[in-house]
Length: 117
Picture 1 (cartoon, one colour):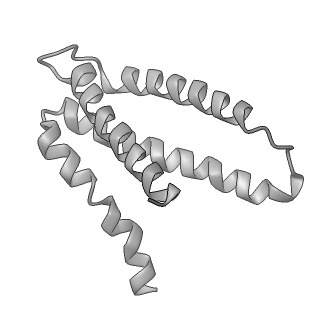
Picture 2 (picture 1 turned 45 degrees about the horizontal axis):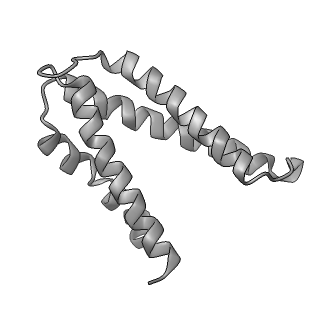
């Protein structure tokens, strides 16, 4: 089995598990945490995981890659905004069984430019 396939399956397992944790943290029948506060702590977790990951794979900083670093920052902002809207959808009463399939239409958004442009 190709390495990329195993890694993609791992991503699916972690993102699926993430949805369960979101339900527990935000669901009014569970902890009922506010979406803004939850996202703040999600950001702390992401930063901790990414620092660890970066330190496990140390690479020198390259000024030639500044445009790519800037683009990566924008990727983070776009991802975070998607997270904000998903968490707000759950807080607004959407069940995970409703919210997750809707936001997973992101695959269509991702492949559309390949076929139209």
